[in-house]
Image (cartoon, rainbow, N blue to C red; front, top):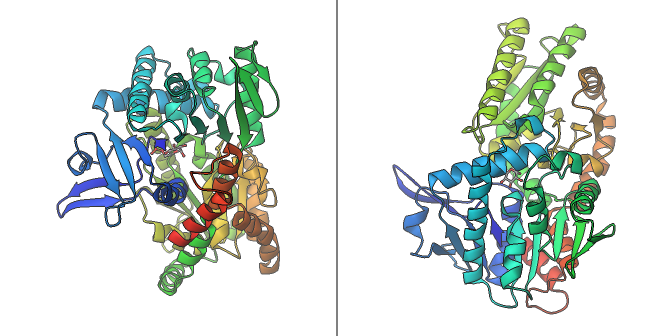
Length: 479
Ligand code: G6P
Protein backbone atom coordinates (compact mmCIF):
# COMPACT_ATOMS: atom_id res chain seq x y z
CA UNK A 1 0.00 0.00 0.00
CA UNK A 2 1.30 3.42 -0.89
CA UNK A 3 -0.37 6.68 0.18
CA UNK A 4 0.67 10.20 1.03
CA UNK A 5 -1.04 10.22 4.45
CA UNK A 6 0.16 7.56 6.87
CA UNK A 7 -2.15 5.35 8.96
CA UNK A 8 -0.31 5.92 12.26
CA UNK A 9 1.18 9.31 13.13
CA UNK A 10 3.45 9.91 16.11
CA UNK A 11 3.19 13.35 17.63
CA UNK A 12 5.13 14.71 20.58
CA UNK A 13 3.42 17.11 22.94
CA UNK A 14 4.13 18.25 26.50
CA UNK A 15 2.95 14.93 27.93
CA UNK A 16 5.16 12.78 25.68
CA UNK A 17 4.66 10.91 22.42
CA UNK A 18 1.15 10.04 21.25
CA UNK A 19 0.25 7.79 18.33
CA UNK A 20 -2.86 8.84 16.44
CA UNK A 21 -4.71 7.49 13.45
CA UNK A 22 -5.96 10.08 11.01
CA UNK A 23 -9.74 10.17 10.73
CA UNK A 24 -11.19 9.13 7.40
CA UNK A 25 -12.72 6.08 5.80
CA UNK A 26 -9.74 5.00 3.77
CA UNK A 27 -7.38 4.27 6.64
CA UNK A 28 -10.22 2.69 8.63
CA UNK A 29 -10.99 0.28 5.79
CA UNK A 30 -7.52 -0.55 4.60
CA UNK A 31 -5.75 -0.89 7.92
CA UNK A 32 -7.58 -4.16 8.79
CA UNK A 33 -6.75 -5.58 5.35
CA UNK A 34 -3.11 -4.75 5.88
CA UNK A 35 -3.29 -6.35 9.30
CA UNK A 36 -4.53 -9.51 7.64
CA UNK A 37 -2.08 -9.59 4.73
CA UNK A 38 0.78 -8.47 6.95
CA UNK A 39 1.99 -6.30 4.11
CA UNK A 40 3.90 -3.04 4.03
CA UNK A 41 2.31 0.41 3.93
CA UNK A 42 4.54 3.14 2.54
CA UNK A 43 3.65 6.73 3.39
CA UNK A 44 5.07 10.16 4.16
CA UNK A 45 6.24 10.30 7.79
CA UNK A 46 4.63 13.62 8.65
CA UNK A 47 4.42 13.43 12.47
CA UNK A 48 6.94 15.37 14.56
CA UNK A 49 7.88 12.20 16.48
CA UNK A 50 7.80 9.86 13.47
CA UNK A 51 11.58 9.69 13.00
CA UNK A 52 12.36 8.76 16.58
CA UNK A 53 9.72 6.03 16.68
CA UNK A 54 10.89 4.31 13.46
CA UNK A 55 14.11 2.45 12.67
CA UNK A 56 16.86 3.80 10.42
CA UNK A 57 14.94 2.67 7.31
CA UNK A 58 11.82 4.47 8.54
CA UNK A 59 10.11 1.19 9.43
CA UNK A 60 7.82 0.64 12.38
CA UNK A 61 5.55 -2.29 13.17
CA UNK A 62 1.93 -1.32 13.66
CA UNK A 63 -0.43 -1.34 15.49
CA UNK A 64 2.08 -0.94 18.29
CA UNK A 65 0.11 -2.94 20.85
CA UNK A 66 -0.38 -5.87 18.44
CA UNK A 67 2.11 -5.57 15.56
CA UNK A 68 0.69 -6.97 12.33
CA UNK A 69 2.28 -5.09 9.47
CA UNK A 70 5.06 -2.70 8.61
CA UNK A 71 4.60 1.01 8.13
CA UNK A 72 7.51 2.30 6.11
CA UNK A 73 7.85 6.03 6.45
CA UNK A 74 9.38 8.13 3.72
CA UNK A 75 10.99 11.36 4.88
CA UNK A 76 10.47 14.63 3.05
CA UNK A 77 12.39 17.83 3.72
CA UNK A 78 10.52 21.17 3.95
CA UNK A 79 11.33 22.05 0.32
CA UNK A 80 9.92 18.72 -0.83
CA UNK A 81 6.79 19.16 1.28
CA UNK A 82 6.38 22.60 -0.23
CA UNK A 83 6.92 21.60 -3.85
CA UNK A 84 5.59 18.05 -4.05
CA UNK A 85 2.70 18.19 -1.54
CA UNK A 86 1.61 21.85 -1.41
CA UNK A 87 2.97 22.59 -4.88
CA UNK A 88 2.34 19.90 -7.45
CA UNK A 89 -0.35 17.91 -5.64
CA UNK A 90 -2.34 20.78 -4.15
CA UNK A 91 -1.59 23.77 -6.38
CA UNK A 92 -1.63 21.98 -9.73
CA UNK A 93 -3.44 18.64 -9.76
CA UNK A 94 -5.99 19.63 -7.11
CA UNK A 95 -7.23 22.90 -8.69
CA UNK A 96 -7.09 21.59 -12.26
CA UNK A 97 -9.03 18.42 -11.45
CA UNK A 98 -11.59 20.49 -9.56
CA UNK A 99 -12.00 22.78 -12.60
CA UNK A 100 -10.21 25.75 -11.00
CA UNK A 101 -7.58 26.11 -13.72
CA UNK A 102 -7.06 29.77 -12.88
CA UNK A 103 -5.74 28.80 -9.44
CA UNK A 104 -3.09 26.43 -10.82
CA UNK A 105 0.55 27.43 -10.34
CA UNK A 106 2.26 25.60 -13.17
CA UNK A 107 5.80 25.92 -11.84
CA UNK A 108 8.49 23.62 -13.31
CA UNK A 109 10.16 23.29 -9.90
CA UNK A 110 6.97 21.72 -8.53
CA UNK A 111 7.09 19.19 -11.34
CA UNK A 112 10.78 18.41 -10.79
CA UNK A 113 10.26 17.80 -7.08
CA UNK A 114 7.08 15.80 -7.68
CA UNK A 115 9.03 13.52 -10.03
CA UNK A 116 11.83 13.16 -7.48
CA UNK A 117 9.45 12.33 -4.62
CA UNK A 118 7.57 9.82 -6.80
CA UNK A 119 10.89 8.16 -7.52
CA UNK A 120 11.78 8.17 -3.81
CA UNK A 121 8.50 6.39 -3.01
CA UNK A 122 9.08 4.00 -5.92
CA UNK A 123 12.56 3.18 -4.57
CA UNK A 124 11.16 2.52 -1.11
CA UNK A 125 8.48 0.29 -2.67
CA UNK A 126 11.09 -1.61 -4.68
CA UNK A 127 13.04 -2.28 -1.52
CA UNK A 128 9.96 -3.72 0.13
CA UNK A 129 8.16 -5.52 -2.72
CA UNK A 130 8.50 -9.20 -3.51
CA UNK A 131 7.90 -10.52 -7.04
CA UNK A 132 4.31 -11.62 -6.48
CA UNK A 133 3.17 -8.77 -4.26
CA UNK A 134 0.14 -6.68 -5.13
CA UNK A 135 0.90 -2.98 -4.99
CA UNK A 136 -1.95 -0.53 -4.38
CA UNK A 137 -1.22 3.16 -4.80
CA UNK A 138 -3.61 5.82 -3.49
CA UNK A 139 -4.44 9.13 -5.10
CA UNK A 140 -3.00 11.99 -7.08
CA UNK A 141 0.26 12.26 -5.20
CA UNK A 142 1.81 9.30 -7.03
CA UNK A 143 0.73 9.29 -10.67
CA UNK A 144 4.21 8.45 -11.90
CA UNK A 145 4.68 5.45 -9.67
CA UNK A 146 2.78 2.76 -11.59
CA UNK A 147 4.98 3.15 -14.69
CA UNK A 148 8.15 3.59 -12.60
CA UNK A 149 7.43 0.37 -10.73
CA UNK A 150 6.35 -1.45 -13.88
CA UNK A 151 9.84 -1.10 -15.37
CA UNK A 152 11.37 -2.93 -12.44
CA UNK A 153 8.50 -5.23 -11.56
CA UNK A 154 6.94 -6.32 -14.86
CA UNK A 155 4.97 -9.17 -13.27
CA UNK A 156 3.52 -7.46 -10.21
CA UNK A 157 -0.11 -6.51 -10.02
CA UNK A 158 -0.32 -2.72 -9.59
CA UNK A 159 -3.45 -0.61 -8.99
CA UNK A 160 -4.14 3.05 -8.35
CA UNK A 161 -7.26 4.68 -6.93
CA UNK A 162 -7.94 8.32 -7.80
CA UNK A 163 -9.86 10.00 -4.96
CA UNK A 164 -10.80 13.30 -6.62
CA UNK A 165 -12.67 14.24 -9.83
CA UNK A 166 -11.01 13.61 -13.17
CA UNK A 167 -11.80 16.56 -15.46
CA UNK A 168 -12.41 16.66 -19.23
CA UNK A 169 -9.26 16.63 -21.34
CA UNK A 170 -9.70 20.32 -22.27
CA UNK A 171 -9.23 21.19 -18.60
CA UNK A 172 -6.64 18.58 -17.70
CA UNK A 173 -4.50 19.52 -20.67
CA UNK A 174 -3.48 22.87 -19.17
CA UNK A 175 -0.91 20.84 -17.21
CA UNK A 176 2.24 20.92 -19.35
CA UNK A 177 3.26 17.50 -18.00
CA UNK A 178 -0.11 15.85 -18.73
CA UNK A 179 1.30 13.18 -20.99
CA UNK A 180 3.84 12.01 -18.43
CA UNK A 181 1.09 11.88 -15.79
CA UNK A 182 -1.27 9.81 -17.92
CA UNK A 183 1.57 7.58 -19.09
CA UNK A 184 2.59 7.06 -15.46
CA UNK A 185 -0.91 5.99 -14.51
CA UNK A 186 -1.12 3.58 -17.44
CA UNK A 187 1.62 1.52 -15.81
CA UNK A 188 -1.14 0.16 -13.53
CA UNK A 189 -3.23 -2.95 -14.18
CA UNK A 190 -6.30 -1.33 -12.63
CA UNK A 191 -7.29 2.31 -12.20
CA UNK A 192 -10.25 3.19 -9.98
CA UNK A 193 -12.31 6.40 -9.95
CA UNK A 194 -15.42 7.38 -7.99
CA UNK A 195 -17.84 7.83 -10.88
CA UNK A 196 -18.53 6.76 -14.46
CA UNK A 197 -18.02 10.32 -15.72
CA UNK A 198 -14.51 10.52 -14.22
CA UNK A 199 -13.74 7.21 -15.94
CA UNK A 200 -15.03 8.61 -19.24
CA UNK A 201 -12.98 11.80 -18.81
CA UNK A 202 -9.83 9.82 -18.07
CA UNK A 203 -10.34 7.59 -21.10
CA UNK A 204 -11.04 10.66 -23.26
CA UNK A 205 -7.76 12.22 -22.12
CA UNK A 206 -5.87 8.99 -22.90
CA UNK A 207 -7.36 8.93 -26.42
CA UNK A 208 -6.23 12.49 -27.05
CA UNK A 209 -2.73 12.07 -25.68
CA UNK A 210 -2.02 8.57 -26.97
CA UNK A 211 -3.76 8.17 -30.35
CA UNK A 212 -1.91 4.89 -30.75
CA UNK A 213 -3.60 3.39 -27.67
CA UNK A 214 -6.70 1.20 -28.02
CA UNK A 215 -9.35 2.57 -25.70
CA UNK A 216 -12.65 0.85 -24.85
CA UNK A 217 -15.23 1.94 -22.26
CA UNK A 218 -13.38 0.22 -19.44
CA UNK A 219 -9.85 -0.54 -20.56
CA UNK A 220 -6.81 0.81 -22.38
CA UNK A 221 -4.35 -1.27 -24.36
CA UNK A 222 -1.11 0.65 -24.54
CA UNK A 223 2.38 -0.62 -25.33
CA UNK A 224 1.16 -4.22 -25.28
CA UNK A 225 -0.34 -3.97 -21.82
CA UNK A 226 -3.90 -3.64 -20.62
CA UNK A 227 -5.04 -1.22 -17.94
CA UNK A 228 -8.59 -1.70 -16.74
CA UNK A 229 -10.38 1.51 -15.74
CA UNK A 230 -13.54 1.40 -13.64
CA UNK A 231 -15.74 3.35 -11.24
CA UNK A 232 -15.88 2.30 -7.58
CA UNK A 233 -17.88 4.84 -5.55
CA UNK A 234 -16.34 4.94 -2.09
CA UNK A 235 -18.56 4.60 0.98
CA UNK A 236 -18.28 4.93 4.74
CA UNK A 237 -18.18 2.45 7.58
CA UNK A 238 -21.96 2.64 8.02
CA UNK A 239 -22.25 0.28 10.97
CA UNK A 240 -19.54 2.07 12.87
CA UNK A 241 -21.23 5.43 12.34
CA UNK A 242 -24.57 4.01 13.50
CA UNK A 243 -22.96 2.41 16.50
CA UNK A 244 -20.95 5.44 17.58
CA UNK A 245 -23.81 7.86 17.12
CA UNK A 246 -26.35 5.80 19.04
CA UNK A 247 -24.26 5.42 22.19
CA UNK A 248 -26.19 6.67 25.21
CA UNK A 249 -23.57 9.18 26.25
CA UNK A 250 -23.45 10.70 22.79
CA UNK A 251 -27.23 10.90 22.53
CA UNK A 252 -27.40 12.56 25.92
CA UNK A 253 -24.76 15.11 25.06
CA UNK A 254 -26.41 15.78 21.71
CA UNK A 255 -29.74 16.34 23.50
CA UNK A 256 -28.12 18.82 25.89
CA UNK A 257 -26.49 20.65 23.01
CA UNK A 258 -29.79 20.82 21.12
CA UNK A 259 -31.53 22.35 24.15
CA UNK A 260 -28.91 25.06 24.39
CA UNK A 261 -29.45 26.18 20.80
CA UNK A 262 -32.78 27.89 21.08
CA UNK A 263 -34.03 27.80 17.50
CA UNK A 264 -36.69 25.65 15.87
CA UNK A 265 -34.44 24.22 13.18
CA UNK A 266 -30.73 23.81 12.52
CA UNK A 267 -28.99 23.70 9.15
CA UNK A 268 -25.50 22.20 9.07
CA UNK A 269 -22.44 22.38 6.83
CA UNK A 270 -19.26 20.37 7.57
CA UNK A 271 -16.24 20.80 5.33
CA UNK A 272 -12.52 21.23 5.11
CA UNK A 273 -12.06 24.94 4.45
CA UNK A 274 -11.40 24.35 0.77
CA UNK A 275 -12.45 26.56 -2.14
CA UNK A 276 -13.99 23.51 -3.81
CA UNK A 277 -16.55 23.04 -1.04
CA UNK A 278 -18.88 25.91 -1.97
CA UNK A 279 -19.05 27.31 1.57
CA UNK A 280 -19.31 30.91 0.41
CA UNK A 281 -22.21 30.36 -2.00
CA UNK A 282 -23.98 28.35 0.67
CA UNK A 283 -23.71 31.22 3.15
CA UNK A 284 -24.88 33.69 0.51
CA UNK A 285 -27.84 31.44 -0.21
CA UNK A 286 -28.66 31.39 3.50
CA UNK A 287 -28.47 35.19 3.58
CA UNK A 288 -30.84 35.39 0.61
CA UNK A 289 -33.14 32.91 2.31
CA UNK A 290 -33.37 35.08 5.43
CA UNK A 291 -33.87 38.19 3.27
CA UNK A 292 -36.75 36.62 1.38
CA UNK A 293 -38.29 34.50 4.17
CA UNK A 294 -38.39 36.84 7.20
CA UNK A 295 -40.70 34.47 9.09
CA UNK A 296 -37.63 32.30 9.71
CA UNK A 297 -35.70 35.11 11.43
CA UNK A 298 -34.84 33.99 14.94
CA UNK A 299 -36.13 30.48 14.19
CA UNK A 300 -33.32 28.83 12.25
CA UNK A 301 -29.53 28.85 12.67
CA UNK A 302 -26.84 27.71 10.28
CA UNK A 303 -23.89 25.86 11.85
CA UNK A 304 -20.88 25.81 9.55
CA UNK A 305 -17.87 23.74 10.56
CA UNK A 306 -14.89 24.71 8.40
CA UNK A 307 -11.83 22.65 9.39
CA UNK A 308 -8.46 24.28 8.78
CA UNK A 309 -6.57 22.68 5.90
CA UNK A 310 -3.55 23.43 3.67
CA UNK A 311 -3.30 26.92 5.12
CA UNK A 312 0.22 27.34 3.74
CA UNK A 313 -1.47 27.94 0.37
CA UNK A 314 -2.60 31.54 -0.29
CA UNK A 315 -5.86 30.57 -2.04
CA UNK A 316 -6.94 28.76 1.12
CA UNK A 317 -6.11 31.77 3.29
CA UNK A 318 -7.97 34.09 0.92
CA UNK A 319 -11.01 31.83 0.93
CA UNK A 320 -10.96 31.77 4.74
CA UNK A 321 -10.88 35.56 4.88
CA UNK A 322 -13.71 35.86 2.41
CA UNK A 323 -15.86 33.36 4.31
CA UNK A 324 -15.18 35.04 7.64
CA UNK A 325 -16.05 38.48 6.27
CA UNK A 326 -19.31 37.05 4.95
CA UNK A 327 -20.16 35.37 8.26
CA UNK A 328 -19.49 38.68 10.04
CA UNK A 329 -21.54 40.68 7.57
CA UNK A 330 -24.54 38.31 7.55
CA UNK A 331 -24.55 37.98 11.33
CA UNK A 332 -24.19 41.75 11.71
CA UNK A 333 -27.18 42.25 9.43
CA UNK A 334 -29.61 39.85 11.12
CA UNK A 335 -28.32 39.00 14.59
CA UNK A 336 -30.51 39.50 17.65
CA UNK A 337 -29.30 39.43 21.26
CA UNK A 338 -30.76 35.95 21.71
CA UNK A 339 -30.16 34.57 18.19
CA UNK A 340 -27.09 33.96 16.03
CA UNK A 341 -27.91 33.27 12.38
CA UNK A 342 -24.56 31.66 11.45
CA UNK A 343 -22.55 29.73 14.01
CA UNK A 344 -19.12 29.44 12.45
CA UNK A 345 -16.50 26.99 13.75
CA UNK A 346 -13.02 27.16 12.27
CA UNK A 347 -11.04 24.52 14.09
CA UNK A 348 -10.59 20.80 13.96
CA UNK A 349 -13.59 19.24 15.73
CA UNK A 350 -13.29 15.81 17.34
CA UNK A 351 -15.31 13.06 15.66
CA UNK A 352 -17.84 12.73 18.48
CA UNK A 353 -18.68 16.44 18.31
CA UNK A 354 -19.30 16.15 14.57
CA UNK A 355 -21.56 13.17 15.26
CA UNK A 356 -23.56 15.27 17.73
CA UNK A 357 -23.99 17.96 15.09
CA UNK A 358 -25.15 15.34 12.56
CA UNK A 359 -27.69 14.15 15.12
CA UNK A 360 -29.16 17.54 15.91
CA UNK A 361 -29.17 19.05 12.40
CA UNK A 362 -32.56 19.15 10.68
CA UNK A 363 -30.95 19.85 7.33
CA UNK A 364 -27.44 19.16 6.02
CA UNK A 365 -26.25 21.33 3.15
CA UNK A 366 -23.54 19.49 1.24
CA UNK A 367 -23.11 21.84 -1.69
CA UNK A 368 -19.57 21.66 -3.06
CA UNK A 369 -18.76 23.46 -6.29
CA UNK A 370 -17.26 20.12 -7.24
CA UNK A 371 -16.17 17.12 -5.18
CA UNK A 372 -14.82 13.67 -6.00
CA UNK A 373 -17.40 11.96 -3.77
CA UNK A 374 -18.08 13.79 -0.46
CA UNK A 375 -18.46 11.50 2.51
CA UNK A 376 -20.13 14.10 4.76
CA UNK A 377 -23.33 13.45 2.78
CA UNK A 378 -23.06 9.73 3.58
CA UNK A 379 -22.09 10.27 7.22
CA UNK A 380 -25.07 12.55 7.84
CA UNK A 381 -27.46 10.04 6.30
CA UNK A 382 -25.98 7.22 8.38
CA UNK A 383 -26.43 9.15 11.62
CA UNK A 384 -29.66 11.13 11.20
CA UNK A 385 -32.91 9.28 10.38
CA UNK A 386 -35.11 12.35 10.33
CA UNK A 387 -33.03 14.93 8.57
CA UNK A 388 -33.03 16.33 5.07
CA UNK A 389 -30.01 16.25 2.78
CA UNK A 390 -29.46 19.05 0.27
CA UNK A 391 -26.78 17.86 -2.11
CA UNK A 392 -24.84 19.50 -4.92
CA UNK A 393 -25.28 17.96 -8.32
CA UNK A 394 -21.50 18.33 -8.72
CA UNK A 395 -20.58 16.08 -5.80
CA UNK A 396 -19.70 12.55 -6.92
CA UNK A 397 -22.15 11.35 -4.25
CA UNK A 398 -25.10 12.75 -6.24
CA UNK A 399 -24.69 10.02 -8.89
CA UNK A 400 -25.93 7.51 -6.31
CA UNK A 401 -27.83 9.73 -3.86
CA UNK A 402 -30.27 11.22 -6.32
CA UNK A 403 -33.22 11.09 -3.93
CA UNK A 404 -31.68 13.92 -1.88
CA UNK A 405 -32.75 17.51 -2.72
CA UNK A 406 -30.31 18.13 -5.54
CA UNK A 407 -29.09 21.70 -6.15
CA UNK A 408 -26.77 23.62 -8.41
CA UNK A 409 -24.28 25.29 -6.02
CA UNK A 410 -23.90 28.29 -8.34
CA UNK A 411 -27.64 28.96 -8.31
CA UNK A 412 -28.39 30.90 -5.13
CA UNK A 413 -32.13 31.12 -5.86
CA UNK A 414 -32.25 27.36 -6.40
CA UNK A 415 -30.55 26.81 -3.02
CA UNK A 416 -33.00 29.23 -1.36
CA UNK A 417 -35.89 27.18 -2.75
CA UNK A 418 -34.24 23.96 -1.57
CA UNK A 419 -33.89 25.40 1.95
CA UNK A 420 -37.54 26.42 2.00
CA UNK A 421 -38.54 22.93 0.83
CA UNK A 422 -36.31 21.18 3.36
CA UNK A 423 -37.34 23.31 6.32
CA UNK A 424 -41.04 22.92 5.63
CA UNK A 425 -41.11 19.12 5.24
CA UNK A 426 -43.23 17.13 7.69
CA UNK A 427 -41.49 14.46 9.80
CA UNK A 428 -43.16 11.79 7.66
CA UNK A 429 -41.87 13.34 4.44
CA UNK A 430 -38.38 13.57 5.89
CA UNK A 431 -38.38 9.94 7.00
CA UNK A 432 -39.71 8.82 3.62
CA UNK A 433 -37.01 10.74 1.78
CA UNK A 434 -34.25 9.55 4.05
CA UNK A 435 -34.98 5.85 3.82
CA UNK A 436 -33.66 5.09 0.31
CA UNK A 437 -30.60 7.21 1.03
CA UNK A 438 -29.88 5.31 4.21
CA UNK A 439 -30.33 1.97 2.45
CA UNK A 440 -27.85 3.01 -0.20
CA UNK A 441 -25.24 4.22 2.28
CA UNK A 442 -25.68 1.01 4.24
CA UNK A 443 -25.39 -1.26 1.20
CA UNK A 444 -22.61 0.60 -0.58
CA UNK A 445 -20.41 1.00 2.46
CA UNK A 446 -16.61 1.12 2.61
CA UNK A 447 -16.37 -2.66 2.70
CA UNK A 448 -18.52 -2.99 -0.41
CA UNK A 449 -16.15 -0.52 -2.09
CA UNK A 450 -13.12 -2.44 -0.96
CA UNK A 451 -14.41 -5.83 -1.97
CA UNK A 452 -15.57 -4.62 -5.40
CA UNK A 453 -12.16 -3.12 -5.99
CA UNK A 454 -10.28 -6.22 -4.88
CA UNK A 455 -12.55 -8.49 -6.89
CA UNK A 456 -12.03 -6.49 -10.06
CA UNK A 457 -8.31 -6.47 -9.38
CA UNK A 458 -8.41 -10.25 -9.08
CA UNK A 459 -6.74 -10.03 -5.73
CA UNK A 460 -6.80 -13.11 -3.65
CA UNK A 461 -4.24 -11.74 -1.27
CA UNK A 462 -2.51 -15.08 -1.02
CA UNK A 463 -5.68 -16.67 0.22
CA UNK A 464 -7.95 -18.99 -1.72
CA UNK A 465 -11.55 -18.63 -3.00
CA UNK A 466 -13.70 -16.41 -0.87
CA UNK A 467 -10.68 -14.39 0.21
CA UNK A 468 -12.46 -11.14 -0.38
CA UNK A 469 -15.43 -12.21 1.71
CA UNK A 470 -13.06 -13.29 4.37
CA UNK A 471 -11.28 -9.97 4.32
CA UNK A 472 -14.54 -8.11 4.48
CA UNK A 473 -15.74 -10.27 7.34
CA UNK A 474 -12.36 -9.82 8.99
CA UNK A 475 -12.49 -6.08 8.75
CA UNK A 476 -15.95 -6.11 10.23
CA UNK A 477 -14.76 -8.25 13.10
CA UNK A 478 -11.68 -6.13 13.58
CA UNK A 479 -13.90 -3.13 14.15
C1 G6P B 1 -8.72 14.61 -0.37
C2 G6P B 1 -7.64 13.80 -1.04
C3 G6P B 1 -6.90 12.96 -0.04
C4 G6P B 1 -6.42 13.83 1.09
C5 G6P B 1 -7.58 14.58 1.73
C6 G6P B 1 -7.15 15.53 2.86
O1 G6P B 1 -9.76 13.80 0.07
O2 G6P B 1 -8.18 12.98 -2.07
O3 G6P B 1 -5.79 12.31 -0.65
O4 G6P B 1 -5.74 13.05 2.06
O5 G6P B 1 -8.23 15.34 0.72
O6 G6P B 1 -6.18 16.42 2.42
P1 G6P B 1 -4.68 16.43 2.96
O7 G6P B 1 -4.00 17.34 2.00
O8 G6P B 1 -4.78 16.96 4.34
O9 G6P B 1 -4.14 15.04 2.95
